[in-house]
Length: 367
Image 1 (spheres, rainbow, N blue to C red):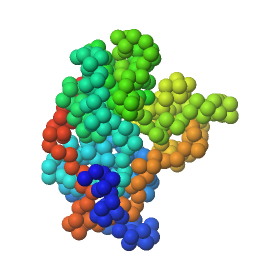
Image 2 (tube, rainbow, N blue to C red; image 1 turned 90 degrees about the vertical axis):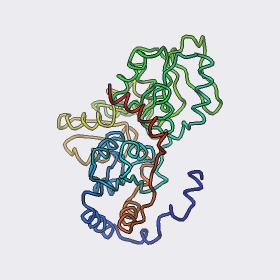
Image 3 (cartoon, helix red, strand yellow; image 1 turned 60 degrees about the vertical axis):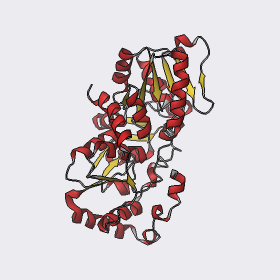
Image 4 (cartoon, helix red, strand yellow; image 1 turned 60 degrees about the horizontal axis):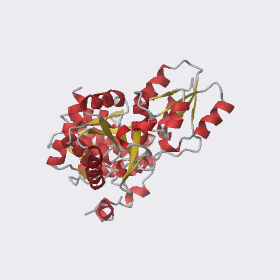
């Protein structure tokens, strides 16, 4: 059954009664269930989640960090992961069989992760081996499906995060002459550029047309970038930066490396979500910042740091639509289903995929 067919099943649709409840009623019920379930319940919440959900999170962080925290929490039988599908998959991979990972809304996916499916990747690998032979190592951003992590694992590669991408790309080049970087071309391009690899040494693999986009002698290619992107971060533009420079010249511009090369190149600084948060926390009172990342997080930073002038780099930016799928009604529904013994929206990765994905994760974590 496909994901789309699955989502049409009645068991995956939010019961109407939750749409009728007042916010206060839902919040009170969530508190009651958390107290009732105690340590057997663990709610990790990604930085990009809504405030109405984050208020109940037992831990807030990035995707891999939350999966690791979940794995260490052996008391938790029920892990209600407030993030997106690939994050819940990683949590299931790293936790024990006795623990159940639940995604409150199965529609909470990631457009970037969905831009590289396993069939496209296997096809690309075969074609690229025909061009480059055994000179490539695959790397995948943790923002990818379990199947892609498993592909990378069984082909000798590793996962990367936006925090450690530089060190992992360096490691990959110690293993092979070339890398295939999945699924976010911008993080791959920005990282490789920072390490001194020229833009003319980077090619793009187009999974739709099944072709390598590159002009020139392919023997010069060192990095093959998968043609994928984050639909949120790609919406920060050079024009946004030019506008800030002309209207708020005193502002520091900091962006996520999932933004385009042009935007990252013009910004004052760039880094992972964790890096951005820590940079704002450490900034001097009265300092001014334009931040190029997801709007829920930017709004939260504005609220948490009233002593600083903080705005979004793109004032017309919307929160990540798939992250926003998880709301208070879906969270409550998940928790009440646990209490009733009817766990729904369980995320389960098969043993073979999990084993191979762990190989990719461990090559990163053991460095």
